[in-house]
Image (cartoon, rainbow, N blue to C red; front, side, top):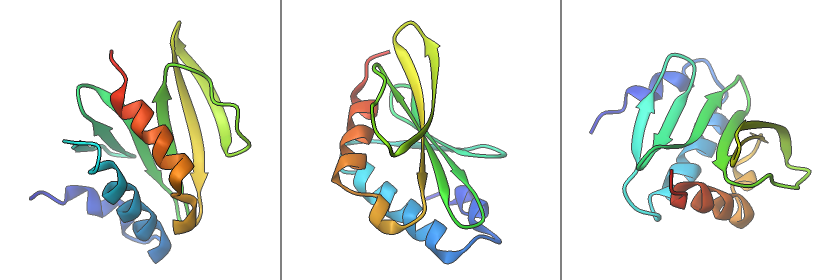
Length: 114
């Protein structure tokens, strides 16, 4: 198993890695997930990219790709990438932020057809 994405946690608070681990445990329940570490982020893919993880000193910005715009106070930024694709940024500061609601959104993103 390749853990090259772990370099994204160097110099970060331990909570950041714990948040990532909880996300990964949740999405592995959905099925096969391809982890693509990039220079500034970790992309999560199945048939195509459905989420991105951007590590910061003491939190994670999770970017979710959905076919609809979420209406939630948890969403800090929304970009419309195409006619029916919205990229949502959600700030995760604690392991408890990875809850049923977030995992439901991740499942929706994972299940999207291109």
